[in-house]
Length: 559
Image (cartoon, rainbow, N blue to C red; front, side, top):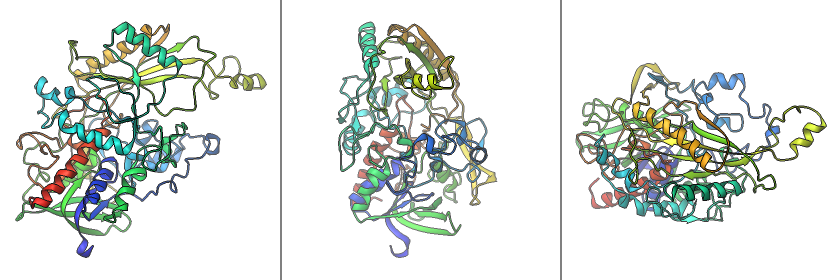
């Protein structure tokens, strides 16, 4: 475009940014999609997608060099030898942990849409009403009815498999046929239903994996290698879904290696004029102009951009007259639950490696239940049989060992809880100017912790898991609480919350900045509370909704 000018700029190409690009281009806007990392092309750039475990030099394990360059990413299982290039080099991109926060990131086109867990659950009316009813933080400026048609819209496009259950705390959606529970899971679901009278349900998980061909994409092959990129396009990602749609319009310009340093503000027009970009390869600074800016860089990266966008109008970060920017950071807390050995079923097995499990929706503090904490949790998990990689007692070498591994091992079942974290003002991020990244930018400092409400909840998260496995008839039950730090769930939310009052929130009901009406923030930053369901589907729905509003306002001349 002439003079680097576009109708719209989208910052970030992950789940939210991909959706923003699709919607804005399809509505006729010449759109610049900025991604700070490298380009990844669908299929061609998934180099390990078809490799076997034994084809990796270290069988998936981290080398000393990998551990040294990725001191944060190595803290948990996602970072390994199977797809190491999808995770950020922590030495190039440091941050300050005032309190421990595990920030798992990927800098490339598609962002974490290539690495996400694909669990796709709607929030319910209980979730959007929760802050108002509990009298904490601020009220959501929207309700389930506002988002429901947009849930429909994104589900129809991305493809979500699931079953219709009629549960008020887990609204049904536009589903492809569900994946199937295995024999153990089916029996457990029936026993829980009978014992709890329907007050606790175990359903098949709802995931953005295709169970039938959809929108030109292939069906899931039950390989469970999603984290390496799917050459079949069988799960939703920017590369498989939203980017091709945006490209097809002829209205998209994709620019990788483009680090957005700040949003530029025109004090006379009281609008954002564009963005300042640092070319990640040359360090050159470039300005791009646009009528509307969508901030979709992911929660913490978006918070950095907004806080770093300072001038005489906004000395504390663009759109921050409320003083709320950077505050109210949330994540889910997890890594606790129970597992059990399952006797019987030795003559039964299951098809392939299903990339999905079961889900037990929230039941605490609902329908008359009252605990010594507020909000609740849900469980993910499943049953399976030990495979060829297991140890065999008293056999660890020779022919007998090999023969034993030719037979599937014992059944077991595990369920792990994901709990809601409340929005606390003191859980925050801010700019740390004492430290610089590879490109000379200051870094983000993160000061966030779980508090008493979450700690009380975790007791139930463990005990209820054990109770349900006991109800299922299992005897050898082990409980665990491995501890959870914010960031570990990779469901970070908040820092630029939506609200009704400009004095107490950053965004209005349309994800539009109160102070700068042509800036929209639609990734996790916008969330006013965290619920306990995986949030990505909600980001997609809110993004599509905001894009529709933004284009309407542009046509009216309001932006």
